[in-house]
Image (cartoon, rainbow, N blue to C red; front, side):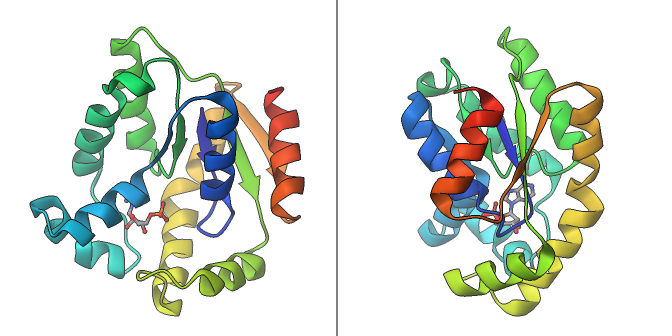
Length: 181
Ligand code: AMP
């Protein structure tokens, strides 16, 4: 499954809760990149500036990261992707990776939250890449590059929309209901 939503929509929180319940890994590309930055690896050094500006890391780099992660044993029985895909080309890459594993997506959950609430939530969590400017830029990137995925998954009959404005447990209940899990 894929969790889709703007930065601050709570998709990371929901992915972790749901993954625990379903016994599959929650795979957050943002967390993977932040770990690379913290470790000072070559990957981390190459993406740090892009992340700090709130821009998207290039599709080729992301394809490599996701391909390797989905090949790991724990992802064979299923996975929840949080933060990938974020562009239409990335969605195509994901389809290719899964086709190569004789697998396919079961569902894409879109967590919808109004923009003022997104900014408020992102500012409250105080992550290193969460300056107000970076948050605003991430929202712009989301609108331009990620929002087209809503239509992409709608036409593939995979999209389930959930109201993400309530409490964590309310949103978990709504996501579970949408996924019938
Ligand atoms: P996130 O924690 O998902 O908000 O990701 C934090 C940052 O990591 C983003 O602002 C991007 O710079 C980068 N990132 C994470 N996932 C992707 C992706 N699928 N494509 C491009 N950049 C990404």
